[in-house]
Amino acid sequence: MEKSDLNPRGIIPPMITPLTARDTLDIAGLERLIEHILNGGVHGIFLLGTTGEGPSLSYRLRRELIEQACRSIKGRVPVLVGITDSSAIESLAISKCAAENGADALVLATPYYYPMTQPELLGYLQRLVPQLPLPVMLYNMPSHTKLAFDVDIVREAMKIPGIIGLKDSSGNMGYFHQLMHLAESCPEFSLMVGPEQLLAEATLLGGHGGVCGGANLRPRLYVDLYNAAMARDFKAVTNLHRQVMEFTSRFYSIGGPTFGVISGLKCALSLLGICGGAVAEPFFQIEGAKRAEIQNCLNTFGISKP
Image (cartoon, rainbow, N blue to C red):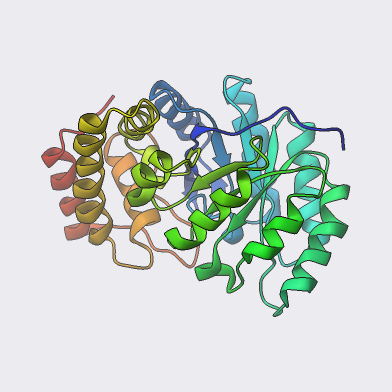
């Protein structure tokens, strides 16, 4: 793989996957969602991440999403595609589909199910990444994969051609600080944070932006916060960060601690007429009283149909 010029920065929403049924893509909803997100001024779109229910989707549907999304985005922003899988062969297959459809980068978390040591994880990266057709962002998501990229392994991984950055969803700012120290010697290496509650802090301290699920619904809020942090406009950062905290603390609690973020986002977007609220198993669609709660939340924060 040739050296990549891609240097991810800013707000790159982990886009939900609009569905009409658990294995049926909502194509019209996908087009509306992409326009809604892009109208918020985001700097990229991440397909098949955790918020996109990537691991729950059939391989056929993953390919359809990549094809349809890349066709709709039309190169207006970089497209990153999640390829994490327990099968390296399937990761390779999805990576090739992404490249063939014009995606710009891949996102790779640690493989799950079988336990691995850190040296074994490094060996996995050293074998797999050179076979991939696009540059790679690592994805540290230990709560879901049960394995983290230790700092020493990230240091070694940065030497592998094709690895261009890391998204950290651990919520551990001590770990993130250590990564920022590593990246001082490699300014083209992107460090992005997952938990949106940490976006302001991470960006002010030298991080490069956020992969924030809430930007599916309120992209402009997260873009404005990122821009204010980059400009060191502390008054604006304080105000916008407070808005993010108030919104997430109320909105994400409605659907429950496990499924609330994804099911809640899909419910909210369906209430706004952007896409349907169907989810893939094992999630469940929000209905009834909780749907009314989400509508009340939208009303409280002044979020209305585009």
